[in-house]
Length: 193
Image: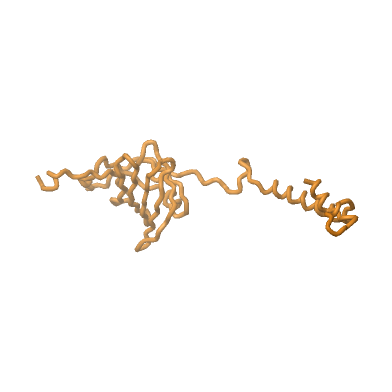
C-alpha cells in the first residue's frame, strides 16, 4: 500500500505532451502527510471494533419470578369456575410488577410452565383506568405468545404455547390469583343435562 502512496505522491520530472508522466521526484511533505493519514485510519479502524470480551451494552438483568415462591390457597368462600381445569393459586411477586413497567422485561413464569419458561416482553400499551398491557413471547419457544394486563397488585393474562393448552391468570381477591387451563364444555354440559 505504501508503494502506491509513494508512486502517487511523486511529481513528474519531464512532462511531454502525449507521453504519460514518469514519477520520480516526491512532492515535499505530501508523502509524509499521506502516510500519517493512512496510519491514523488503520489505527481508528482497529480501535472501533467490538469484541466478545468487551461489548458496548450491559447485559440484561437476570429474570425474576412472576409469582411468589410459596403456593397460595384460595380465599375463604371462593368456588372455582367448573370450566377452570387444573387450577392452582399464587401471589404476584411485587418485583415482577416493577419489572413489567420497564421495557424488554425478562420474567420467569414459575407456577405456569415446567420447567419455568422466561417471557420477554416487547410491547407495552396503556389501557383504560390506568391498566397496562404487556405483550411478548417465550424465550426459546417459537410461536409462543404471552399477554399480561396489570394494575396495582392485580394481574390477568394468557399464555399460548403451541401444542399445549392455553394458560389463563385471573385475580380472585385478597392478592391471590388463579392459574388455570380453560376446559372446553361438553355438548351435554352446554344443554344442561
